[in-house]
Image 1: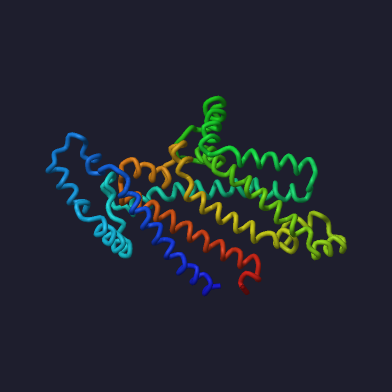
Image 2 (image 1 turned 90 degrees about the vertical axis):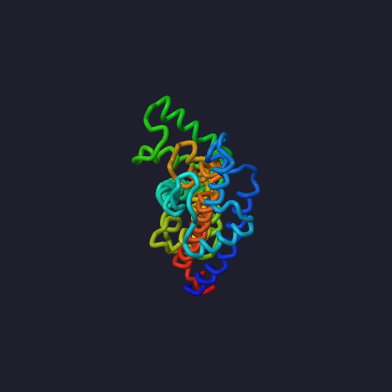
Length: 310
């Protein structure tokens, strides 16, 4: 298992390099001058040139790229144009908020998707199964940027139960977590249903039923001995991918709810053309996604010994 994870880490390095390179090039291809935006339209040419030299923007793009890669290897992501602080300090101060939101959204997703998928699989073809299918279709069809404002209108403006925006306690987490977790719960429900139905058609399940085990013992994770455990591999895989998606896809939701996380920080960096901060945000998201996938592989190996043997 250790050797397998080591190989996966080595294979992830080219992906990270490609991501960093693409973000660096895209940030410089987009028209606009960050120095002009920082000093304003009425800034003198001497001041513009002085700040451009101080930020290292007066050298060719290739030289900037080589310097940037060298700084990354030394753990230096540069200094933010907007905050005038080290990029590492800025993104680490915002990362806990995104991590908190992603974890709660994943819990919402699992709390809805796994029971609903098991219920749909146990009652395949019934009205309950069809109703769950309609609800999952609705969850997949409504995007975050539409669901978020609707939740704000209903639960914050009309009912006044929850705060509109900001970061605080569980009340502040409820709406953005539901907004992020709803669509993912629909995907997970379908995955759980399909995986469990596939396992229920195997011989060992028919044998368990022939021995007199109840449907509850066959379906539910009773010591993880029957259908649910064998259906865990695709479920764990989709949960890991969804958690990585949550870390990378919170931009719209964090912007809607003014959540002070990496997603909103990325939008601010794009608006201010803060190259170092933008590159640092994307790099952190990419590293987080890779780490989540490695942890998913480890969880799959613990759940199914056959993965370790492979």
